[in-house]
Image (cartoon, rainbow, N blue to C red; front, side):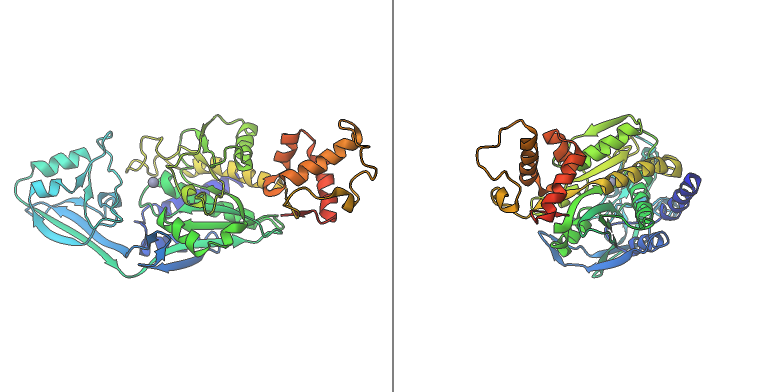
Length: 433
Ligand code: ZN
């Protein structure tokens, strides 16, 4: 079984790695279509220029070829050799230019001389090439002008994204998000896309999962914003979520806490890492990062965490041509995959109740839950524990705090609280989510 999933990760890494993905375009569609070989993903489109909150869907970008030739017609830099050579969303251009002009449009990796850096120009009409230090020196040493050709197209089209909703017993949902906008890099973000797809496939194999799972495959930032815009009301049913990215490096595990550090999603991830005896680093919530910024913004406030193996920003090859299939492999992704499966198991065990009497405490005697003779209740006896537990439950069950967290908070055994919660449910004081 383990071998089989490693093999599948490797197979799809090889298939998807070469595609030049971006915010939009045919290669994003192709990526989503290939993911349909794993899961029945719905591919959806949102038209260019659609306003989504404070943003606008950009024109659709497609690219056929891009190169720099010397004055004799020799190709020195070729997009077909590595799609990172071209700054993503470069405008079409075909002209002959001088070295000083070309130089302004060349990008180098600051630390690693033989890496091609990853650059984008999504919201500024510009163009550029990314090269190694050696290629830069070669270009500089050439005599004469340079022929530049960028065979790109920016048109009124659409932005594509994928969605899969796996219905559970509860209408409450877990959101799982990943981004499909990076060209040929393996850890960021392809490893996360594949892990998310195989995790969806794994959950689909459950016959009776409790939560509903919403998987989305969107270009980062604009795609997540567009998704939030289109699904504003549906996101109200989301209890918490995971942003899956950079999960396939050779390095160590770490996790980024959701915006409320005491939220159960963080505890679940930390428990899994400890139970599996993994060394790990904790990254507190930070406003930089991935799409948790959108889902956790004030209008949504969804707690989103991420478990990584070589987190973005933290590994040398990040955003460069060295983030490739020599760095990332199926075995490494599978290690993280096993942890994510355990996270899902724990999420499935969580129990949430919500008070049906949210404003002030209920009058317990009306429900036959309180001693009939006033004054007979003395704190710290058995009878009062029962009443206290009812009061604690009615106090904490606002639908955001799970029962296990409440039991830890009030230091009462989970099983005992569950029995009382079920009594309160039978009296319509609590609703199970
Ligand atoms: Zn990135």
